Structures are given as structure tokens and as C-alpha cells.
Image (tube, rainbow, N blue to C red; front, side, top):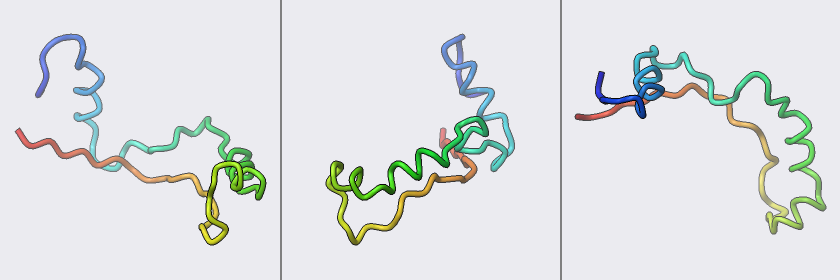
Length: 69
């Protein structure tokens, strides 16, 4: 592995996983209510989000980590 010591055990485990096998959004987040809240007009106004901005959506993509040594 690339790292040494106990501080990097999780990084070593992550790097050992096949590309695309790690999802950016854990299945337990229950993000539907968060998205609904962030798309409310009053919340967008409070966050100074432009009226022309697209609606909020949770990102769902796999991690692909490349480290050059």
C-alpha cells in the first residue's frame, strides 16, 4: 500500500476498492426532504440563490481516485 501507519488505514482500504465501487451518497441519508427544503423559495432567498438557478439535486456518482506517486 501507499501509506504507512495506523493514520492511513482507511485511505489504504479506500484505495484498494475497484473504481466506481464507492457511492458518494450513503444509502441512509434520506435526502428527499433535504432537497425539498433547499428548493423552497424562502430558503433560496435566505441563501441569496439567484431565481435563475437550477433546482438543488443530490449528487450521486462513484469515486474514482487516482494518485500519482
